[in-house]
Length: 275
Image (tube, helix red, strand yellow):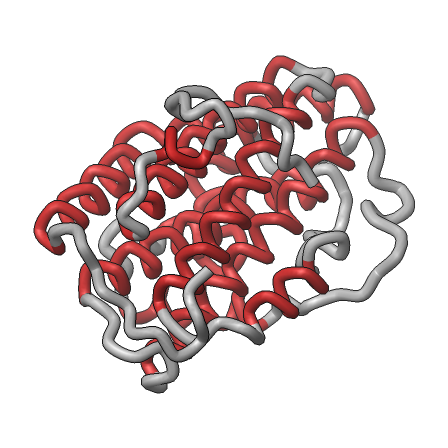
């Protein structure tokens, strides 16, 4: 790892990084969001039918209103967010809090809803980490930060906010409280590691580690899900986390294959880093 005061030198092309971030956002908006919210609605209906959860909102109303507006409109941030929606997202993020909880998921969250709670807590932690990095960069604590790197970080943070909104939509529509805390297992480690961050390289390494845990956890937890709808929702989010990982490797000037013990390309998601 680079030293705290080492100057970050971006060896890639800002133009190429900007193009990668644009492709990431287009894929998320054109494919990921529709699949994700369709998965949320299907999962809500599936759990409602299997667990006899009373719900007054129809599937159509949920898709067109409640689901899209969940967590203060956070699900729409990446799609040409208006100032009002941006402010709503800021308020939603302000409700998130770091946690020292020892019991997680909370009592009463079982089966697929327990997986949803864990996923939401991981997404919350990612939002916190990216937000903290962007705040530090704005304050000049990380040295010179290429504009394209900042744009990617803001994009990734927005997408994690939307992922958390999707899982919390499932929880709320099934009579559970939304998960506003960060994952208690990883929070102490992320806090300790972030305290050592002094440049963009270290921040990117921290983000890469967190994204790797998120992707691995989705891979591991998907196999534990019971409903086809829940599997579909999880599967619609994991590819976005993997795209974040690929771009972070580029930011660090590294090929994915250089990180494997055998020197082989990191072509598939694994479960080795799962939370």
